[in-house]
Image 1: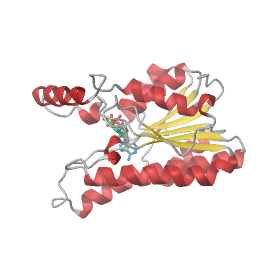
Image 2: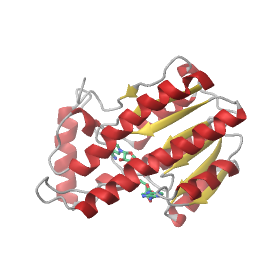
Image 3: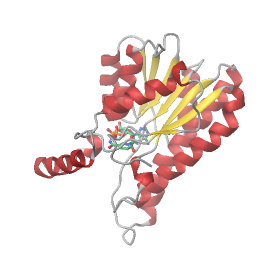
Image 4: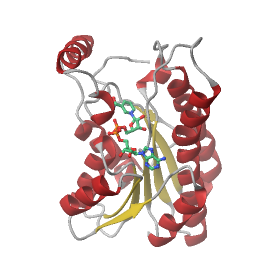
Length: 246
Ligand code: NAD
């Protein structure tokens, strides 16, 4: 059911963490994987690990023209995983316009550009397809210091729903993944001691008693891209260990 043989899939943020784990899993499932990221070195490592069906596209998702080029190179495109993103911490009163503009540009506009270009290509090719966006568990609650991040992620949820409604008639499904706390370079920038403390706390909040791994999210993406999810669109899938059950 999760066979992606013959499918061409673009993964943004593929140089690290969730994007990399997803690219590797999709390649294992038979897909031709187009890996996009700012980080060229990380991208090369992902492509080397994924094997001969993987291709590197160094790009900045904030530039729609660069995203369009990658989508065209991946033609005919069957799937997208928009995982490129950044994290920024500041309280509401300390948030300045530059923080908000940067988070909005990368975390929302970057995902929007990929969804726009993928939808245009799939509509023109009449291939149908499946788009997967990366939201966050942050949209289900109020997390201190994550205003800019949460605003962009909430906007991604709304983009996902709106596009699912608009593109469904073209055979294009659009779903969001809202992961809980996942151990990746984004979440492991603390000292070892602070890191252990955070992970213990996060694991205790889950009925499953552990934090998430990038592969937990990659499997959710594989499902949503596959024909097993043929009747699923406009939804939020939450690989979060049961930390939140909205
Ligand atoms: P990560 O930092 O390991 O990977 C993010 C990747 O995005 C990096 O390789 C980075 O170079 C790339 N990137 C950043 N800005 C870019 C740009 N302008 N153009 C192209 N590429 C760019 O982070 P991750 O934890 O793997 O996160 C992946 C996605 O999952 C993000 O959208 C993140 O918000 C989301 N997410 C992560 C968690 C978590 O706990 N790790 C939880 C919920 C949601």
